[in-house]
Amino acid sequence: MVKKPKWVVEKEQARKARAAETVWLFGHHAVRDALLNPRREKMQLIVTPNALIKLEEAVAAAGITPEVRDPRKFDAPLDPQSVHQGVALEVRPLDWGKLDEVALGDGTRPPRVVLLDRVTDPHNVGAILRSAEVFGAQAVIGTIHHAAPETGALAKTASGALERQPYLRERNLADTIVALQAMGYIVLGLDGEAEQTIETALAERRDRAIALVLGAEGPGLRQKTRDTVDQLVRIDFPGGFGSLNVSNAAAVALYAARP
Image 1 (cartoon, rainbow, N blue to C red):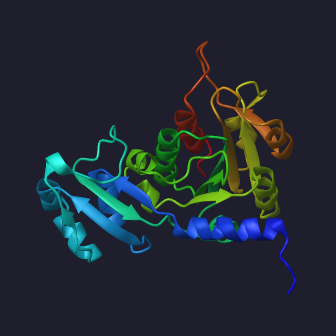
Image 2 (tube, rainbow, N blue to C red; image 1 turned 90 degrees about the vertical axis):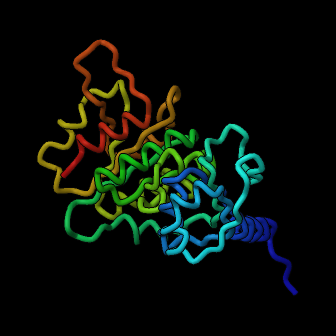
């Protein structure tokens, strides 16, 4: 019998580990939308009597039997600081499919996607998912490493958008950019020092597929990312202070890039 190379064994082990992992969602909005999402595999629901009354229809629709707990003995395995509102739901992470399936769009309008370069704060990613849903983006794309995974905090900040807005995590961001370029995307990297504004860069090109790449606050885009995108652009600020939180920058950029 031929022994498998070490890297093959490690890759298979990582795949099995990801398939077995679960996430605890919490908060009324995040849990309600997860219960109503037929794509979401639900494992265990822990709820207080008052929360169950508010979520009664969603619980019934999901066909899950809740475990009712006294508010003083709410024993879901959550961070003590979590504002759980008396409800926690254990689920499997969502599988949105492959990049080429998600990013091509449905042909009704030019697609938009958001790529995140080392944006690890779940609250920022959750807020970006909300903005992406509002502005009709095809997907938000991070990386397997150095990116926020699905967590209860991310889901609560997304306020239900995690259940509807595709959130992909690819192995290599530069390779993902190249793949999008091959699909016909114009890939713009957000950089406060760029010479051209996003509006100017998109003049007469709004009918094209557009990908917006945002970096972590502080370090910004990595050099490899900067070298791979088609163009670096900035958000134009009339004032002297030109810095936004990455989630706010994503919302402004999505609005500026609307078809």
